[in-house]
Each structure stands twice: as structure tokens, then as C-alpha cells.
Image (tube, rainbow, N blue to C red):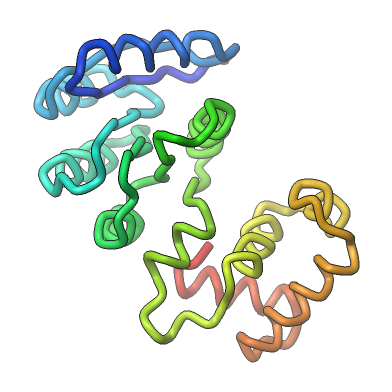
Length: 201
């Protein structure tokens, strides 16, 4: 079963190029194109696409408000495709229920994976981006530690995490141990509980 995608981008060439790129991915169907925020919202309300990709520079608070309205609709998930992932926008997106943020200069594979991830009900925020957005003096983890936690939260094994992060299994275990210690957790399961309750993963 395919994933229906609505593409919002205010620039016609960019919008068409993005739609063409997504259509190349097996399992993705572009079911709508929107040139302005109101059109995107109306399409989402009427057609309920699985995922709405909202293309933005990264500083437009108005677009973020529309994205939050869309994500409040049943069965609609929203992925921001941002040129500039500035801390206030990423933080507002994360706390406002947006399902993920992808940088416009990321490889296409990252966008495809993020769409598929949010469609499965997970969130797609790059861990390094989240460190930048969340750090406020109370966030104790490094980007690598948060990345390992993200993988653990998805059910990945140490072997799988090592392969995906191009690290040795011993290094991954060290990251897990240091994360458990920093969070004052009893074990990795408890560390995941703390991270989830803090909305870090």
C-alpha cells in the first residue's frame, strides 16, 4: 500500500522538481501540489493525505502555524523541508507536534526515509538538530549519545546501530553506558524511559 503525499512549495519549479523526485520512490504517490499555505490546508482537510511535505526557508512562523493545523487533522502527518533549520523553528516544530524536519541540502534518501518513518507513526528529527534545538542547560547528552538512543527507541540492536553509525559494537556499548550514567538511569531501558518522558526521542 502506497503513501499519499501532498507537496507544498510556493515556488513552482521547486514544487514540480520535488514532486518529480518523490514520484521516483517506489511506494510514494504525490496526490496533490499546493502553492500557498491556505491551499495546502484546504487540500489536507478535504483529501487527508498520509504525509504533507511543507517546504520552507526555515523562519516563517506563519507556515509553521499552518503545518500545526494540518498535523492536528486525523491521519495527517507533516514533514518540514527546511533550508535553514534555526533553533526556534526546530524547537517549535518539535514541541508543536510536527512529525519531522529534513534539511533541503540532505540527500534525497534522507527525505524518502523521513516520509516513510513519519508514516509509520515515528518522528524524524535529526539528533544533531535536536541537540541544537533542545539544549538549554538541562540537556545532558551529546549528539552521538542521542543518536544511539534514537536507534534504541526504534528497537535496533547494538550490532545494527554499529553498522548504521559506522562504529564498532564496543563504541556503541560505551555510548549506551555513558548515556545511562549521565541520565542517572538504572539501565538502557530506564534511560529510554527518561528520554521519552523528556520528549527527546
